Image 1 (tube, rainbow, N blue to C red):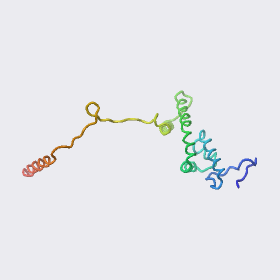
Image 2: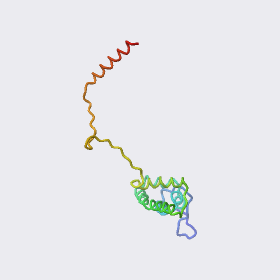
Image 3: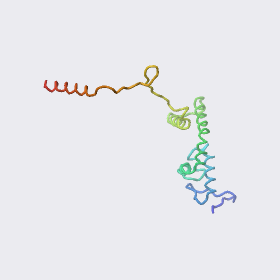
Image 4: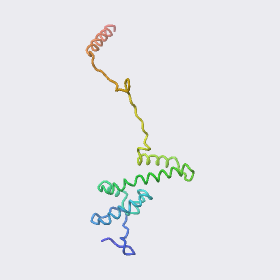
Length: 158
C-alpha cells in the first residue's frame, strides 16, 4: 500500500524511479501528471514533478499507445510555445545565444517538419518534360574489338 502524505488523501511522493507495476492507479496518475507538467517544465522537469526516472516516459511511449498518442498531441502546443519564444527574441523581449537558437531551430524542425525542414529536389527530364531515355542497344563486341586492336598497336610500339 502506498504511504499517505500529511493530508492523508494524496499518496506521498515517491523518490524518482519507476512505479511498481502492481500499482496501476499510481502509474496512470504519474502518466497524467507527467503529461501535464511536460507542457511547462520540459522532459526532465516533468519527470521530477511526477516522481519518475528520466527514462520512464520513453518506456511508457514504447508500451502504451494511449500515452504515446497523448504525448504526440502535445507537439503542436509545444511548437506554439517555441514559436512564441522566437517572436520574443525578434521583438527584443528575450535574449538567446547562438547555441540556444540552434537548438530551438532543430526542435522546431522535429516538431513541424512540413514547415521548417529544408526542402530541395533535383529533377532531370528529357524533351517536353518527359523522362530521359537510356538506350542500350548496340554492338558491345565492336568496342571490345577496337580496344584489342588499339592495345595491340600500343604494345608493338614499345
